[in-house]
Image 1 (cartoon, rainbow, N blue to C red):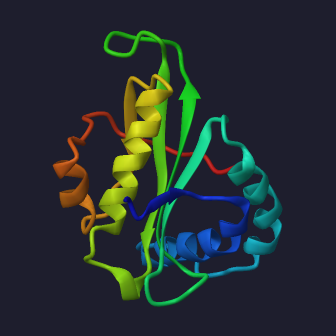
Image 2 (cartoon, rainbow, N blue to C red):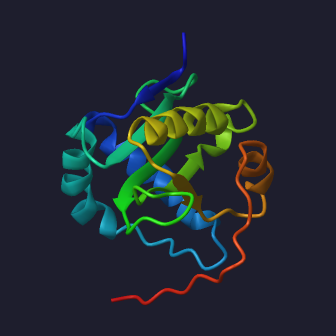
Length: 156
């Protein structure tokens, strides 16, 4: 039996905690948590949509009842098709985090495996993510490769 399960609305608070763990590890991560209260209701709604374009997979913390050990979150977006992805469905992994006390147990890999199955079931022709140097070996072992084109962002 797999340790991984689909996250539910009851996991929203813990999901935000683990997302903050990930954000705090980024070079320019913002450690403020004031945004959690505003984000929580929307996250609960998204976690309750079983057939939507958003999914989160989690592992319960083995040593702390009610806490999560790992979290992986992704979405499926439509983009105009192209060679290699004619239907234009693209997966995007935007949050992968493991509780510091539960690392090196394979939880993030197990969650990623489930998320990749979910992407395939929805017909995604590709999956994108941004990798930290520490996580690159995991993603490379799952088949991810660097893209040659640069990414830019505009904050609105």
